[in-house]
Length: 206
Image (tube, rainbow, N blue to C red):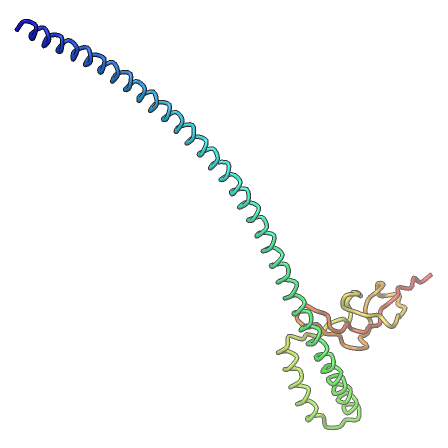
């Protein structure tokens, strides 16, 4: 009976020792697990930081590309605007050239009617028919914004006048317009035909 009890005691002691050893093993295992978890956490943090750095680097490259694309787009838009302006200017110049040519031909016919009226007036003939035609022609020129250039008595301006004759004078300053030989005209802001004029040359009396 005592031996049995001793066996029980021995068994309990053995279980106790095993239990203690298991606790130690559990503690070691837990420590290893915690260390692995810490190492894994550190490794994950390093990987995450590395990944974030890679993303930042990639983002910087994409932002640089975006900035380059924006500059290229701005250049393209500027080129497009310049091309648009040049095209519009070319079209307007062609339209102006065609309009000027038509108006110049019309003015040649107008001049013929004016000369015809002057000739009839000198002969004291009836000019009512021509007056009506010239009135309509003047209205047409006004609608086109064609204006005559007033030159008589003005100082010669090469932008508006074309001198084809010189008259010496002791009373007038140089380049004073003494006569209009052919009327000049402006269409809007363009001189489509300069006035043919006679200008003075001052002569100093001794």
